[in-house]
Image (tube, helix red, strand yellow):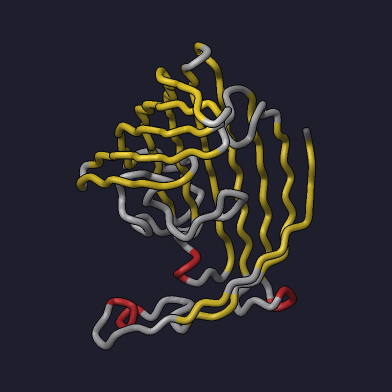
Length: 230
């Protein structure tokens, strides 16, 4: 299935910087907060077999988000986000899952948007439970970012309850990524990585309770959330 749509977003941010803080000393763009409303265009090609818990297919998403005084934003910049997701059934109860993300921000970007992720899977921080698991949210901040994730989803235990299938799954995973201040010259080194192990309680393949434990060179984190990371 291929589709394209207009997208519209509204965001207000209010920021206060304590006396003597790094924000007050550096005074980055957007120190006082402001509006970052946008108008955008989304192009999507979706061949997933079942969106809540896919086991086969691919998803390609390209989001272009334009922030300008004409959209009500206090800042003029462009966000381009490309996401690719791939799922392959190795066995009836064993799925290889992958996600790649690449995003570029250009223009006068307020500092609080330098860590936010756009697209359909938008989030306010590059790090945390969605991207680069194990690292703190907003740990990596800059104009260009990429993230690559791999999961091996194994659901060996299942039983019926209230006419629904309930499964218990185990998910080893690896996340890799980094940020850049500019596209050229290309810099590949200094990648940041995390690895870990997750468990899933899957009710009817629609409700997923996720627990992930992630390890990084900077420490470890444990998350309990609804839905898969991707």
